[in-house]
Amino acid sequence: MNFPIDKIRNDFPILHQKVYNHPLIYFDNAASTQKPEAVINAITNYYRQDNCNIHRGVHYLSQKATEAYENTRKAVQTFINAPSSPEIIFTKGTTESINLIASSFGKKYIKEGDEIVISAIEHHSNFVPWQVLCQEKKAVLKFIPVTPGGELDMDGFRRMVNEKTKLISIAHVSNVLGSVFPLKEIIKQAHQSGIPVMVDGAQAVSHLQVDMQDLDCDFYCFSGHKMYAPMGIGVLYGKEKWLDEMPPYQTGGEMIKEVFFDHSTYNELPFKFEAGTPNVEGVYGLHAAMNYIQELGLLNIAAYEDELLKYATRKLMAIGEMRIIGTAKNKTSIVSFLVGNIHPYDTGTILDKLGIAVRTGHHCAMPLMELFKIPGTVRASFALYNTFDEIDVMAGAIIKIKQMFA
Image 1 (tube, rainbow, N blue to C red):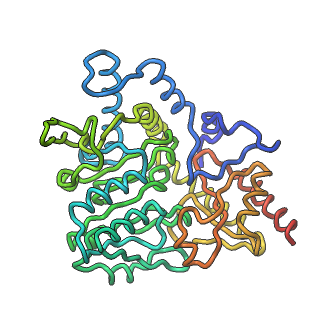
Image 2 (image 1 turned 180 degrees about the vertical axis):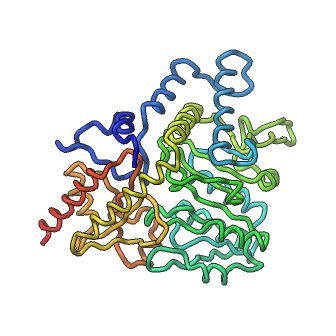
Image 3 (image 1 turned 90 degrees about the horizontal axis):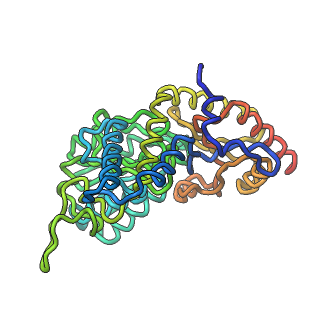
């Protein structure tokens, strides 16, 4: 396919360095992506030209920064095709977004004996908040079963949803296995019973075209740093009907409307959920990252990354004693594997000495590792700037590692 990989790689300054005298190969994109010059420049230009706290200020800099901040909110609305910009809440990232929902939605709607459904494959950030909420409320946390290939057992899901189910919270893409879950089917069934659905989209938004009006989920959250934007900025999309009813998550700053000695009133959406000084530079960087992705085209990115994934899978499976963990039919951007009886930490450490950055361990999914009865995996995760040649280098390195441990 005609994908401008040379130009793209030149846009990412961090890639042009050596690690232990080897060219850096960065395959840890599921943890955090690198940043293009456009994002770096957006942050530095904010501090050079626009630095100011936003909202309420009457002077030029405050109004300029406020306009850019709110224009980014509208850009996010367009990026995920949300119905309205007040439904876009800026957060620190996916983890804070999920905690916001667990706290606010949980406080309003979850009672003793209610049930919340997640899957056994979730990242801890979409696991522990619901676990804590259920412990506090004496509710029940239920887990959608997972097949040996890393897909959801949809028959098991259908059997566990009942009149006690008050919320379903599910990843769009597994951060361990790359499995893409059948969200539309899950959401359709949930809505037939009036059950809202929250989606953890952290691993999806830089790889797939997401559309809130098509998905029709009730909440969707993602992090900027996994889509070429800065750390510490994220998005929570929520349907207005829920956000209007939910109590604030934190108080102070822009979420206040009026304060009296005996009570306070709260601001309208989206400001009701944006307490304190916002991460303005992060929002500037997020806007630049979305522009960068849209200029390349998400469909083009997805097609290229799909070819990378297929190629990596073929190369790795050609190596003897290779076990790929997660063989879902619908996957994106991630291959997790084990090499014979070599501990994943040992594999990852030696790959690092050869300049190849991968992630090792349980990937914040300890229950899944327990389910699969493995200590962890080596995870190689791909982004739009990775190449087929880099995959060849990794495969060659793994063959050497096998020989070392033979």
